[in-house]
Length: 123
Image (cartoon, rainbow, N blue to C red; front, top):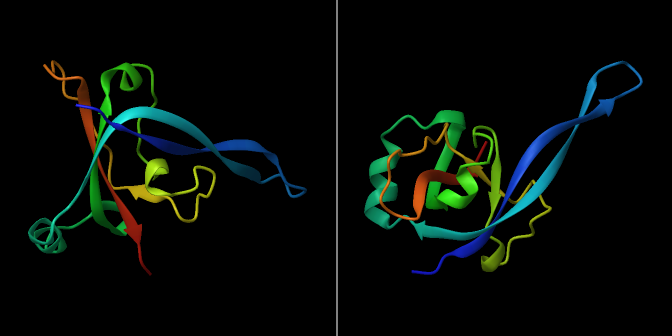
């Protein structure tokens, strides 16, 4: 099974403004070999009744490869751009938000050990 390339965007502190408040910047990291699965209508309808963290309307499930998750920081608060589906890896406004805090499955017999739900925030 072959995956596709996505970009994970993380917010990092990038100094302070003139009032001493932190200034943040989004940094993009490309992750190859992810399995991206759009939710079908039944899954999307069923998820509307559930409380979604961060107000995210989930539209995709993304399985991340072990090779990346072993060294990566947690995905809570991150955004994901589906690069091979036309999303700009440096545009934090159009990137999909990660819902909640995905956890790794250990031990896991496949090449992918973490699944994240991502989607848009409306409102």
